[in-house]
Length: 206
Picture 1 (cartoon, rainbow, N blue to C red):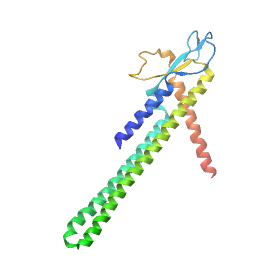
Picture 2: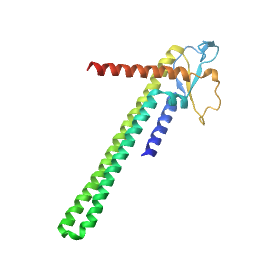
Picture 3: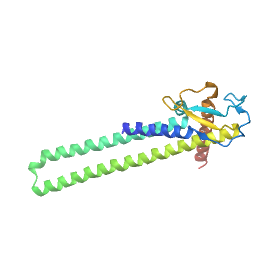
Picture 4: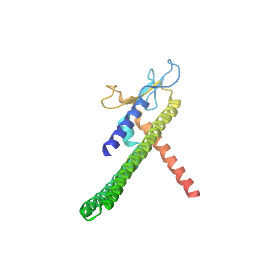
């Protein structure tokens, strides 16, 4: 289960890179001056970048979601272990008493234990599938949040490209003056905080 969670978040990272890498927006004509990361105007600069690793590491939605899913994963593992141990104890008890049972009683008990085992396997698979679907939904929400905010951010700045920069990625060097990671991160966290506040207020009204 832990390996599955690690894989899921690797996929999330890949999705985020895909969102941020070479997003082309319709900006001002190419002859216009570009906007630098510090808010100044620098001729010819129409490209900025975001450090993907840093963005995910500090994005509160990502951190909360990862913690929530890991907790659910942990709870499911504990539940399955408890059910598994209980079934194992029943099997051992049956094996100890098998010789004192009639053939019909033994067959009936064995059939019941096999049914419990099948039910446990089915429950494990269904729970894992449900958790996987929830993870996929959160991944999609993460993707949409990042893309939506970058699109809004770009409407105010008119960049031609917003690149996703990550260690070992396709970009070998990026000028720090073009790094807008903190601005994107601040905006994303502000929106996320506002969304949580709205949900809390709505719950109180109910």
